[in-house]
Image (cartoon, rainbow, N blue to C red; front, side, top):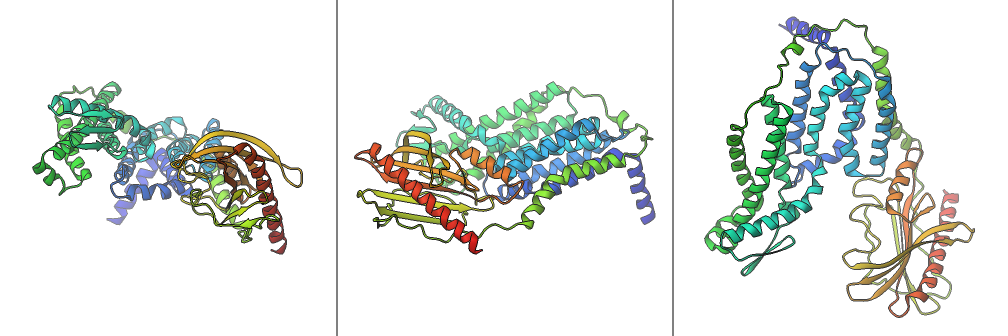
Length: 512
């Protein structure tokens, strides 16, 4: 029995070398660039999230990869020299996005990177057979977030019309549906993106199982997507009826909105199945000829495989080893000194910079010799990682929900050594109607950078060659009386804080 199984495995290896090489290269890609999947997994496991179907999508993608093996029987895998530059570029772009902690970018780039590696190692003809399985992974990647705002507005508008058709007085104001005695807010999570992505995935698979032509598959996907959107409107309409009818409301309170949504979506799939029966089949040419093709009798391209393997793993392996050969400097523990003649006071609670995962953070407030209140904030970051990064969606110098920027200007300030520092001067208005002025900039290895995106890219690029230290330095004051005169005070305070930090950093480095 064991001998028969072993003989079968050996025969498969001999008869399908293209599949063998493609499978190995995909495994190498998954291992070398595993950071994408390690960061995506928590999103799939998050309860009630838009991407809880991610694990199932990944398993289906694996099945599609396994299914593709029959389409490469008879094809000869050959390294493509033309694709090697694209491989290095794709690998570098992935590493740059990962080091910059651009979560969506490096995750969305992974299927493209895997395809380029297959192209380089097996040739275009073999790689093209795996394009669809790799593309199917996008149903589990959060690229669908960009559809939430338009679908939210579309749902509110459609529900407003449906309520009027049902004889219910309703007014639509953006994502709000105003009813008699109640206002329904259609949140982004209720926009229907979750059900839409799953429905389109089901439609794509239906076209695969039916072996339809491309136009027919597009029609099936269009039907699946349209039904998902319409049934999500009906789900919201049911919830609105629940607000207006106490008996229905009592029933709906026993189940959460997501559970109701899945029941409605199940009915949507039934309707989709019935609609699918009315779509005429347009089968493609059978793949039996491909499956029956004779095995290739070509010289092994072992050198090409080795070159592709080295090219695929070179950058991620080097990036993983480099940090272990160096050490970050110890976090600065020095307390920022007071300027001469200044008096320390408690920081103003209205200005609260928000950052996460820093290695050091310092806050100082004082009265300068002119009697103006100066607020100083500084932090420092080492390795940038998820939930521990200087620049991200949830980090800010000024809370955008509390402060509204009125004026901004980037200028150069000169420190004690005559080095130009690129800093941003802003004037803001807070919720209490008070005017504020501030001067701040970000630093990467001592280089001042005022633009947030450039900070991310610079940090990522420098991480190719070392361990960059990044951070932000900001000074602010309430300037309701005269913001113009406050600017010069802020610039002096900024330069004093910068010079003090630089000198203490040099002293700590000398001691270490």
